[in-house]
Amino acid sequence: MGGLVLVTGGAGFIGSHLIPKILAAGMRVRVLDSLSSQVHGAIPKDLQWLEQEGVEFIRGDVVLREDWMRAVEGVDAIVHLAAETGTGQSMYEVARYNEVNSQATALMFDVLGKVESKTVNRVLLSSSRSVYGEGAYVCPSCNGARMYPGSRSAEVLGREQWEPTCPQCSGTLQVVSTHETDGVSPASIYAATKYAQEDLVRIGCESMGLGYVIYRLQNVYGERQSLNNPYTGILSIFSTKIRRNGELPLFEDGEESRDFVHVDDVADALLQGLLVPTAPNTIINVGSGVATSVKEVASELSRAFGSEPKLVVTGQFRVGDIRHNYADISRLKNLLNVEPKVTLAAGLKRFAHWVEEQPVPEDRLEQANNELRARNLMN
Ligand SMILES: NC(=O)c1ccc[n+]([C@@H]2O[C@H](COP(=O)([O-])OP(=O)(O)OC[C@H]3O[C@@H](n4cnc5c(N)ncnc54)[C@H](O)[C@@H]3O)[C@@H](O)[C@H]2O)c1
Image (tube, rainbow, N blue to C red; front, side):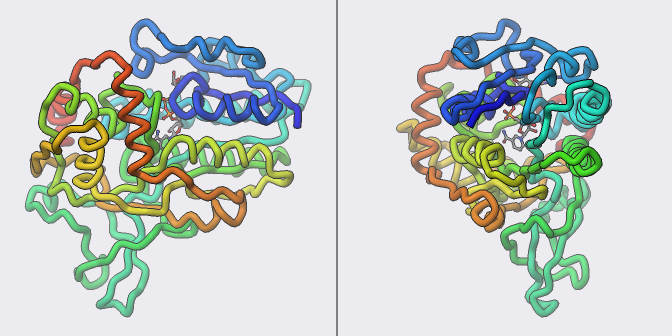
C-alpha cells in the first residue's frame, strides 16, 4: 500500500508511535507540527526519528491557513492529532483551546475545499472520551435504566460526595462501559473543543465525500509521553513524583477510575483506520475496556519503578473532572479488527523503563494546581 499521509501534531506522543507503523505499512508521511514549547520544552529534543527516510517535516501551525495549504498538497489521508490537550488549562485559556482545536479543524476543511488538487480521501481525528463527560451508569432502583449523570458541582464535591447519583431518583449508580451511542455531555472547554472537532469532521467529510474515522481515545499512556507538560498526563505527573521520592497525591478519595490504554494499541487503531479498504465513517472508542482506579494505577506504577507506593488521599478536586469512564470497545474490534494487547502491568513497566532513561523533570504540579485555585477551579 502506497500513499502520502499528513500527520498533524506528528512530533507528539501518539504521532511518534503511529508514524513508524505507517512507514512500515509502506506509506510516506508528512508531519505538520509547531513543536509547542508546552509539550516539547523551549528547545525541542529527541526528534531525530523525524529525520528518517519517508518522513517530511513541516514546522508550522494548524491555526495558519498558509501552513495547511503547504501541508495538504498531494496528500492522500490526514491524521489530525495536533491539539492543545490540558483539561484544566482549557478552563482559562479558552480562546486558545478553541482556536487550536476547533477553529483549526474548520480551517482544514476550508483549505481542503479550496485547494486545486483534491487528493485527500480520508480523515482520521483523535477525539477524546472527555466528550462523554461522566461515563455511562445504570440505576438499580430505576429498573437498571441507563443513566448519564451531569457534571458534579463544586458544592457537591466540597461535601466530598464523590460518586454521581441517579438524575431521576438520586439513588446509587453502577458504572458500566460507555458505548459510542451513549449520551454526550462535555464538562470542560477542552472536551467542548474536541466535540466541535467531531462535528466538523463528520459534516465536513460527508459534504466532501471523504471517508473518516473519529476516535474517542481514553487515557493514553506510554513511552515518549510529555514529561514536561504539567497540565495533562497523570502517569507522567506521578512518575516525576516517584523519581523525586515524593508522595503521590490522589484527588478525591483515589477511587475515581479511568481506562488506561497503552499508546501502542492506540497507534494500531489509528493505523487500521488508514488501512481498512472502506472507512467506517463513524465514531470508535479506543480504550482497554477496563476501569482502573487512580489509587490502583498509582500503586502499580510505583511498583513498576521498584518503589513502595507512597499514596496520599488529598480530598482535593478539580471542577470539570469526571468520576468514572471506561470504554465499550466492541466497535474497535468489529469495525477495525483491533484488540488491545498491552496489559496495564506490562505497559507501566515499559513506561517506567523509558522514564528512567530521561532526565528527571521539574515538578510543576503545584504551579498548575495554583493556576486552577486562583480561578476557583480547584479546592
Ligand atoms: N494522550 C491522551 O491521553 C489523549 C487522550 C484523548 C485524546 N487525545 C488526543 O490525541 C491527540 C494527540 O495527543 P498527544 O497525547 O500525542 O499530545 P502531544 O501534546 O504529545 O502531541 C500534540 C502535538 O501537537 C503539536 N501541536 C500543538 N499545537 C499545535 C499547533 N497549533 N499547530 C501544530 N502542531 C501543534 C504539539 O507540538 C505536539 O507535538 C490530541 O488531539 C489529543 O486531544 C490524547
